[in-house]
Amino acid sequence: MKFWLLFSLILVHEALQNVFGQPAGKGKRPKEPAENKIKPGIKKLKPKVPKLKEATETVSKVQSIMTQVLDKGRFQKPPTMLTLSAGQSIELRCKGDKIVWSYPEYLDTFKDSRLSIKQLDRYGQLILLNSSATDTGEFTCWAQICNGFGCRKDESKTGSTYIFFTDKGELFVPSSGYFEIVYLHPDRPAIVPCRVTTASAKVTLHREFPAEEIKADGTEIMYDVKKGFVYHNPSVNQSGVVYCRAEARGAPQISIKYQLLYVEVPSGPPSATITSSASKVRSGGDFSIYCTVLGEPDVAVEFTWIYPGQEYERPVTIQNTWRLINRGIGHTTRISKSIITVEDFETIDAGYYICRAQNLRGQTTLATRVDRF
Image 1 (tube, rainbow, N blue to C red):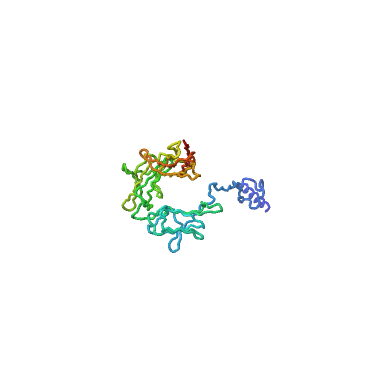
Image 2 (image 1 turned 120 degrees about the vertical axis):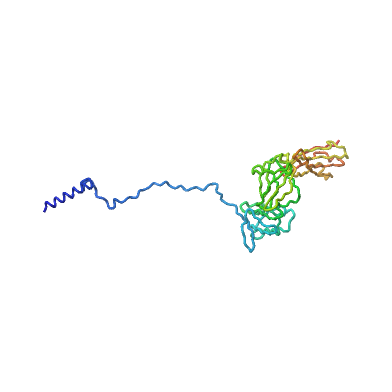
């Protein structure tokens, strides 16, 4: 019995060697509980760097303060361009207790009673009744910031909408005349102001002689529905008579004519000269002094004089005139002149006569002396 038990143990030992390839119980440590389970690995992760906001991000945005009052007490923010039928009325409101309005010049020029502007407690109100095609244009409002020194525009609180008052009989915004002059300055854009009352109208520009269409390439000449045709770099060869043609679901219409005149005088303070009819005058004699400015045709000049007998209220005559002259094909210049005349010359009239000529761009001062024989 003992022999068979020993023999069975030997057989089991050999079987274990065949299965594991090594003697059972040798070269192996006892396993810990759950040692065969997969242990979670520790991954090294790169720290996440928070993305910085771009410095160009605007801190404060412009706040639109304009609303349009609709029927039945409804309101809406008006779009950049709004289309209404001629004859409709419109009410706009802008939030604020000090609101300033800007609107088409036509309404201001004729002090139109159809336009009403009021300042209420919390908003400014603009009402336009019985609109017409002529009213087409930009309507803008802005809030003011006031202190003890005055008021200034609050750039962050504004509102604006361009309104087309559509009229089937008037594709072009009507003009006060049948002919307009457009000056072509070499140093700034020029505008042929053929605006339309329908945003979708197809508008082209044409030269009267030689008869041809002037292509708007979007670079040198472009069409802006709010302004008209814009000449970005005016030149003398663009002078002449032009007109616009518009078409919108029907027969085309022709605008008024525009005379394009090139300006050869550069922008700046007045270019003035001063001359006297005499440098020496006898007692009781008469003389005149001429102050002349050669300038841009559409820039007005104002004259002021300082003369020896001024503080003694010596009587003098001052006459101001201006006219346009053609200095060649397409070249037009404005001559402005001021003449001071002294009669019955006395000793008190001797001395320096000073002319100051001023325009929007500056002032020029000139002087000449008149003595007694």
